[in-house]
Length: 85
Length: 172
View (cartoon, rainbow over the protein chains, first blue to last red):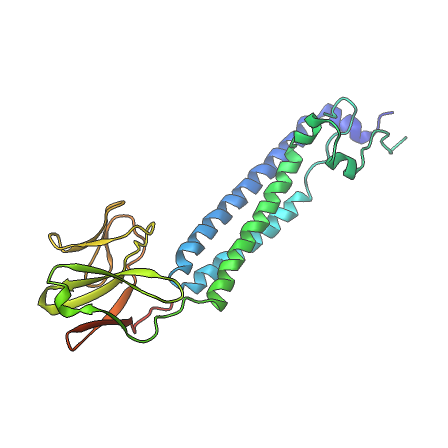
C-alpha cells in the first residue's frame, strides 16, 4: 500500500539527501568554530586571561546546543526492504 | 492504510546487528549524531578551562630562591637553573651589561622549546622556530611565539643571586 509520504519520497528522493547534507555541513561548521574557540582559550588561559576563556565557553556551549537542536531535523531513513543495507 | 511498517527493526537490534557489514556501516545519520556528541565534548573542554582558571590558578613563586653566586656568571653569559615548586620549571638567568640581571622561564611560549641567550646579537633565541625575545623585558621581537617569556625578579644580595616572583603580574 502506498501513502502520501511514501509517494513523496519516491517522487523526490533528493529531498532527504539535501536536508542531510545541509545538516552535516552546519554541524561541521559548528564543530570547526568550537575547535577554534578551544584552541584560543587554551592559548589565552596560559596567561590567566579569564574573560577570553569564559566568552569562548559561552560561545561553545551555544554552538553545542545548536548542534543538538539540529539533530531533531535529521530526516528519517526511508525504510524499505530494498533500502535496508 | 497500514501505517505500521512490517520490517521496522527495533533500535536495540539496529545497534547490535548480526551481520558484520551492518555493524561496521556508519550511516550519515549516525555520523551527524557523532558530530553532535563531539560538539558537546568540545563545549565541556572549554568549560574545563574556565573551571581550571577559576579554581586552580597557577601558583606564584613564594619567597626568594637562591640561584648562584654573582661571580659564577660573567657578563653576557646565561645560567640555567630550576626552582623546585609544584612543578619543576626550568629558568635562565642572564647577566646583561651594567650589572643588570634578568631571569626568564626557559620554555618558549610557542611550543615550549628551550630558549637561550645569545650575547652576539643580544637577544634570547628559540632555536626551534627562530623566535626572538627581548632580553630585558622578555617581549617577542620576531617569530612565532604568541606571548612574552614569563619573567622573575632578580635580587642581588652580598654577591649572591636570588629570584622571586615579579610584582607586576598582569591580570586582564
